[in-house]
Structure formats: structure tokens, C-alpha cells
Amino acid sequence: MSTIVNAHSAEPSSAEPHPAAPLQPQLQPQPAVAPSAAPGVAPKDQATGAGDGLLLYMRRQAASAPRYVLESLVFALAAWVPTVLGIALRALLYRLVLRMEGIAAIENGVRLRFASGIRLGRGSYLDNGVYLHACPQGIEIGEQTFIMQGSVLHVYNFRELPHAFIRIGRNSLIGELNVLRGQGGITIGDRVYTAPLVQMLAVNHVYDDPTRPMVEQGITAEGIVIEDDVWIGGGAIITDGVRVGRGAVVAAGAVVTKDVEPYTVVGGVPARLLRRVDAATAAQEAASRAAGTAKRRVIHL
Image 1 (spheres, rainbow, N blue to C red):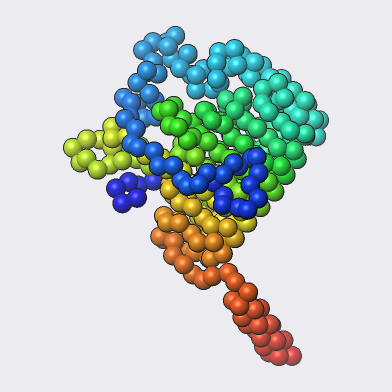
Image 2 (image 1 turned 60 degrees about the horizontal axis):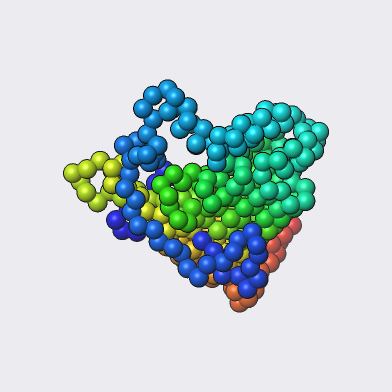
């Protein structure tokens, strides 16, 4: 972590894993990847003319040209339709282009790319303005998980990174205007809640060589793991290579650059331990709150 900074911007150690977020024993560091002439574009994908540019655009949108045509047609027919009628129409037609278990609710104005790599669990919800780009290993959203307005879940891996994906467990909520960049893999467990403007950035730029532009030095991507029952406050940033342990709380505005132990509260820039979450601490804080309430009542009287 000392030789890289986060780019513009990994499996929960729960006792009860679920299909939406299969477990791995540890984060999988990925070596620096040689960059292309243009940031984020592999050399073999460089466009040399108008025709090549059109093909390059299509490769950035779907798994193949026929898939691009199919997905574009389905979205043109149904993506714009408002109200519950649109949700019902999309629940029917979108099965042609993505994997949907049971009924998932997708609002109008949701943008989906590489839809063949998207799996939506039963009862999941995509709010207005959500953008999912699932290339190459996909985006999986578990049962009863909500992705709220304006959030961006972006795998967008065209450098052949081996662990690029986003997987979210059951009964979780990704708050408004969150940004998840999954080039190194992001795995989020069950019952994870994020407040608005949270960022999880599983990719870094290498910048060690002062004689070369940063965009020519490649990237690294280690991955991010958010275990079960985590709460992440508004505006917090989780950087690449971090694991947030089960039951942890990340304070609003924190920048997390190191692993967070289970059942702890961290905050600050960079984030540091504020306290532990345990029965003794909870009892002490409850007593303190009760004493404060009693004092306020006395003052009021």
C-alpha cells in the first residue's frame, strides 16, 4: 500500500456463506498490469478508424455484437417506462438479457451494461439512476438487497485481471450515490448497510517511476472484503486491499487504508480504532445515555 495510491476510482468470513458471495480464504493480490496507450484501454482494443471505434464501443457495452443488439432492443422497449407498470414490464423482459431469481424490481432510468453478467436475487431492488457495468466476471446482488438512487457498480475490466467482480449478499443496502469499482474484486456480505456517498475502490495506480507518466505505469488490484453486519457511514472511502471485519462500523468521512477488526468502530483520515463493540462497552454507554437523559429531565423541570 505504500507505493500506490487509490485510483479514481473481498470474501466475508461468515460462518454461513451464501451463493451470492462465495468465500475465498484471503484477498488475491494482482500484479501491476502494463497500461495501454489510452488509460483503461488495452492495446489490442485501440481504435484506428470510425469502424474500429464503433466496434470498440460495442465491446465496451456487451459480451458480443449479437448480445449488444439484443440488450439494446430490450432496453429501448422497457428501460424508460415509469411507475409500477414499468417495473412489471422489466421484471418480465429483462429475463431475456440477465439472470433474475424470482421477482426483482428495477426502476426506470437504470443503466445496465454487460447484462449477461448480472444476477439479481429474489426481491432485490435497483433504484432510479443506478448504473451496473458487469464486465467480465459479473455483478451479483443477493436476495432483498437494495441498490439506491444514483449508485455506480462498475467492474469494467478490460485488462484481463483475474478477480474482477462485485458480489453483494442478502438483505444489504447500498446507499445513494455510492461508487463501487471492482477491478480487484469486491465482496460484500449479508446485512451490510452503506450510507450515501460511500466509495469502495478495488484498484490502484502505480506511480513509483518519476521518469514516466503515471498512466504508463500500470495498476494493481487486490480486492476488498466487507464481511456480514457492517455499517459504513456517509462519505467513507474503502481503499484497495482492505477487509472490514464482521459487525464493524466505519464512521462517516473515514478513509480506510488498513484492515478493520470485527466488532470495532473506526474513523478518521486515515481511519483508526475508536472503540470496540462488546457487551461491556454497550452496557457502559447505555448507562451513560440513561444518566444524560435523567439529567436533562431534571434541568427541564
